[in-house]
Image 1 (tube, rainbow, N blue to C red):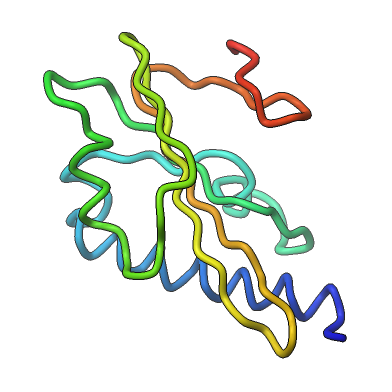
Image 2 (image 1 turned 90 degrees about the vertical axis):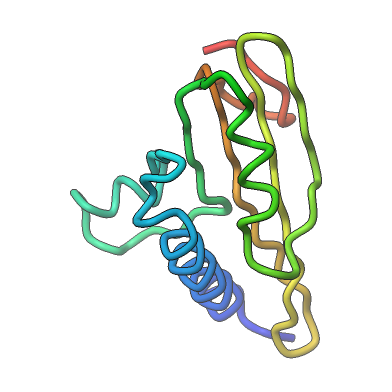
Length: 128
């Protein structure tokens, strides 16, 4: 059985590949404009000593849903686990299961548009 730290490193490598792909496809996160928030954004300010389970982005609400454009820009292998459109905001979680030795590692990319809403302990919106 693989060690937990090795599985987390494998997830980090997969997220880095997804970030590089998304940066290339969006002209450096500018078309559409995306902001990286959460644990990955904190790494600019703190040493790389912690791992996070997902990678979070936020986009300003535009006339057309940014989320719809992002669905076709993401790297292959990511599927939609959750998609919500609720008038003033939307949320999309894209996931990919990657193999690491005999285990599968879940890689998640979360996109919020219009409002930043927190996830409660059971993954429900908290309205923050």
